[in-house]
Structures are given as C-alpha cells and as structure tokens.
Length: 114
Ligand code: 5GP
Ligand code: ZN
Image 1 (cartoon, helix red, strand yellow):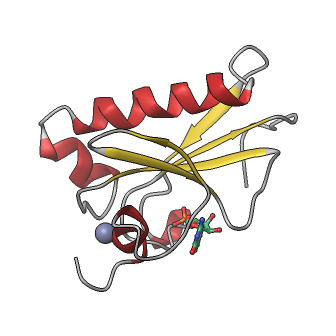
Image 2: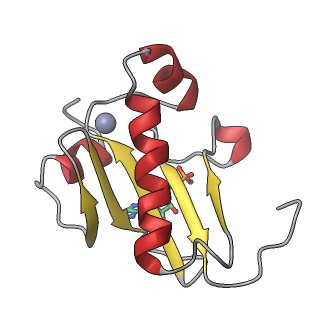
C-alpha cells in the first residue's frame, strides 16, 4: 500500500527501532511507549486489521503471534507476564490501519484496560 505508515516501515522507507525480523514479519519499538516493553509486531504484507489478518488464512496470523512471544522472550518479560493487544477499529483505539500487535510488558498491567 502506497500511503501506509507501517508498509513504509516494513519496506525500510521510514526508520524504526527494529527488534526482530523474519521474511514475513517485522517487530519494532513503539514511538510512544506505554510500558518498558512496548513493541509493535506487523506482517510485512498489508492487512488493515486483525479480522483481515485472520481471514488471510495463510499462517500469517500464526507468524505474528509467534513473533510477539519471541519479542517478549528477548525483552525478558515472558516470565513476569506480557500482554498482546490488537486494537481493531477506531472505537477500540486503532489509529494505524495496518494490523499490528502491541506487545506490552515490564510493569504491572491492570485488567480491564480503559
Ligand atoms: P493503534 O492506536 O493503531 O493501536 O497503535 C498505533 C501505534 O503506533 C501507537 O501506539 C503509536 O504510538 C505507534 N506509532 C505511530 N506512528 C509511529 C511511528 O512512526 N513509528 C513507531 N515506531 N510507532 C508509531
Ligand atoms: Zn500497510
């Protein structure tokens, strides 16, 4: 997609603090972190949201979830606990319409979130 921020980050046209990369997935630190670990995991292919990613039905959603766990392990937050969030739709706070998993950890995380 030509005018998509996360497509541009995935294509390395816009810099990001990349922490993990595979052939189909990129993970990079959120520019406005809400926790000591706050990483965004995106498929390199453009899908607008979690529903579209799930419908892709080519194992890409698995890759994103596995990468989210690898990020948590690499940041040392897997044992203490971490949260994986897909804000889906504007009413849920989605602002970038290229699906991304937020991986949050490194502090106490209250439930439910606001
Ligand atoms: P959403 O609100 O769509 O669930 O999450 C979008 C996230 O992208 C936000 O947490 C925001 O801080 C992050 N973000 C927005 N622009 C950039 C950017 O240019 N670089 C990085 N690394 N994160 C960004
Ligand atoms: Zn995109």
